Length: 97
Image 1: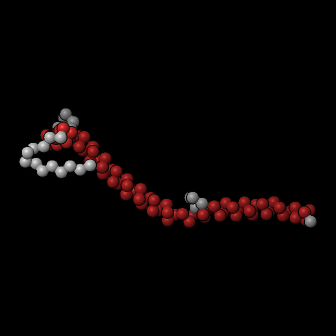
Image 2: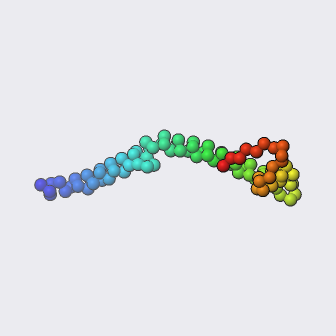
């Protein structure tokens, strides 16, 4: 009986191998059925990148204003008050963590 099935063993093995890779191509971590999850992750990461790029731009502008060539008196006063904890008697101070 085993001798009569021997010619079909290689075909069955190849069919199982194709089925295995085909199954994982659809349902695996990077499979075709996971494209919605990847798209949602891509959208979230793109929004996060935009936010971080805006924050970086803001920090670069603030750093530029603190350089010797283009020192902003208002920004310097703001940073000094913030770091030293001083305030003008006419200012309203709201402390936040």
